[in-house]
Length: 385
Ligand code: NAD
Image 1 (cartoon, helix red, strand yellow):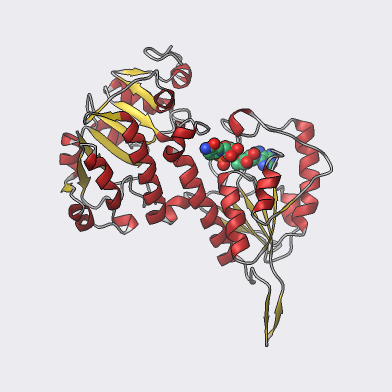
Image 2: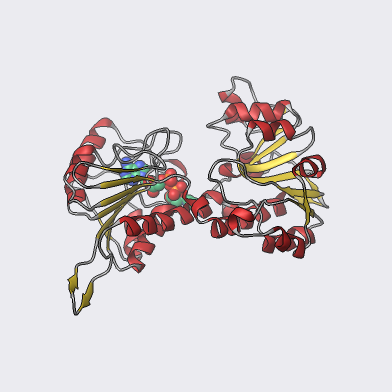
């Protein structure tokens, strides 16, 4: 089986789906690796490194003509979809629940679409394939570095002959994968770290990393299905916002990571709360996107300085800003997933398997993932999900 590594074409996307050091395991499983020339350049993996690891470096045309499976990070662009052909498979963050039309286009072309954003995350044998977590880890780490870089003071307590600098108070809102990594990173930089989440079990996790859990007077337990949070009711939201405003006022840096699956990110930091912060304070909103964000006024990929001197940074694609580490982790996830799917040197699709039921979106001309098929208004065929 020929596995092709495509060069990413989305603006600002510097990651690559497979790094040279990850080739060995796929080769051992009987795969031949083709790499589109320049695919790893954005992550500092040169063509020569892939060739040294035993891959064949090929042109874009040759890649799409010859590969049985195309590995990507971001979903394919319309031009890339047009290059994919019947019987070929494509693997990446295809976002089928956000972009079901892409799934339909791939099914129409007879392409098998495998999406890493739909790995069943709580299944222990799928943990090595959990690319959402591996990339959220990078995002949480990078968000703290961005905040520290923009903050005009020190994070740690520093005593020097030129005086004493107070440590920064950093608040992490949302203690999922990115939030936990952000807590650890801010702590290592010497800040006083506070954290808050609507799932009570996160308190112990945050405290074990050295953060102080912000306890609101109003008890909110928004534990939802699959370890995720549910959306808050209007009353819960109002009391949460009022109490958070108070906590935010005393912070120098706020990093927000809160998400609710399938919903707009919750608004956690209102314009009023931002007004209560000191000049020079910094907010980094990891949830900032076209859907909104956790911070009122945040814009993805932009830094907005308020009239009161508070900087609101809307994080964009942070894993792409630390591409070598993000790609290495993503490769690990891809190799683990392919180890599940490749049998006797060929891709073996079995929609009845628990992992495949999550990740295989289209096969043999049909959208087989029921949730995606439902969005398209057509019943899924083939699977029993
Ligand atoms: P996520 O990106 O969906 O959300 C980030 C955090 O925001 C979550 O902790 C959520 O509770 C919090 N949040 C949502 N609404 C909020 C609000 N109004 N106020 C404050 N916080 C709010 O989460 P994630 O990082 O993808 O992780 C979600 C869950 O999945 C966690 O329980 C995590 O432990 C679990 N998980 C499990 C595994 C595994 O078992 N292998 C792997 C990955 C993640």
